[in-house]
Length: 181
Image (cartoon, rainbow, N blue to C red; front, side, top):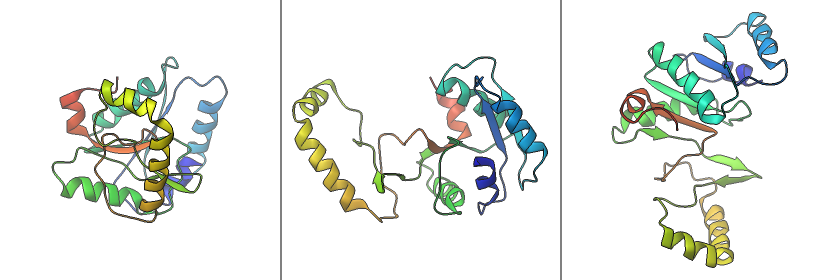
């Protein structure tokens, strides 16, 4: 389903790396057959990991392949991500290209009909963590109010971290900071 959805996006200059993180079912063979029996407007590299090493391990395999193939940007995307606009990849790549100070960009994540945002804009300190824990009910009410306030706003906001299910990162940043830990 993910490969079919990607085939419909309005962006032409990309390829896809699919990493099967040593699934305990037949998903690798199923994906391999699906790729062989369908036409895509992009190339697909399918890789079977040696082990299920978790989220970072699997993504690092895909990142390495993308860098080997010369990718300028790398989109990390879980296979269950839905996108409402077929232009989302163009919007992400245009933004990161036009804003040289930005190294990572991610789309808004909608869950239960509401736009999810990161809880904080900067790294949380131990003192802030204790205060947040003690004031959790009040802080949750404030977060819900903030969520309602930002609904239907399609402008970039600065955050400490993007959601791990979908984000675009510059390849040269991977060279500087290393792979996912």
